[in-house]
Length: 316
Image (cartoon, rainbow, N blue to C red; front, side):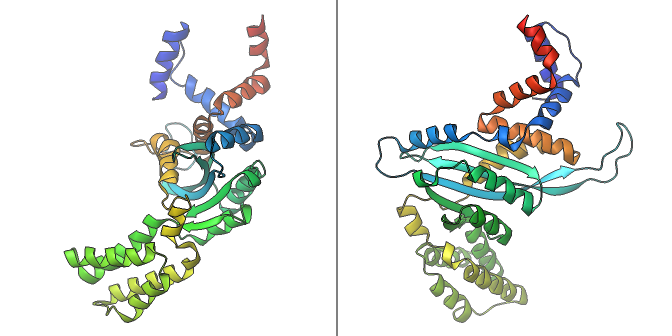
């Protein structure tokens, strides 16, 4: 809810009147102390959730590790009511770890999103990886075609099964179909036929068809066909969707997209909202803590380290 509304509710619930900026200032102060160590669950919690996901099954549950970026609206730092300059969008790079139980129910483990580059993203994921009992899970690494994401995922989880996001792959195929055949039934028919080859893991057959069975109808179509061939060749070892599905692994990035929506988009990308990078990261850490069910631990740490006088007052 908006900070103004939260202040009204705080007054109703406590009888203490506060200003509109009260919850804003307090929450960002909590975000300052919301470290990766506090925001992500500890090893004991992770082991308990793994046992829950496994249930009575003899098979190890699947741990899905996925990463992606989401554009965040940022603006330059400036005093309130001063001219701030033109805003711009910058990626909040993040990851999500979740478990798939026997009934395909998702059990959230850890999410972490920040305005950051590849190196801090990899350092954060490596930190979380140390809390994972690798011998108790089957690991699936899921991402789109961005090379930096695969570098991060495979460095932190070198034994994971690599799976290219099927829907990202399908988008590339449909892009070729539209340029080659326009918005027509033939375009949909051609795309579905090529996707069927890819789904069955016949990447070589798909590439052969693109190289020898398709005559480009325009320079743009030729360029898109070339890009698709290179894309399939670079990710061939990550494409075997039928086999992956049969083994209980996911093939799409819906889990990561839902994390983007709950953590980033719902709060940060509200209509007309622009953020300073520092406060954006603080809010993202708060959102991750709520998503990871660790917010109480983060807030307790804030009270213990930043508000000792308040604690003494409450104890009395």
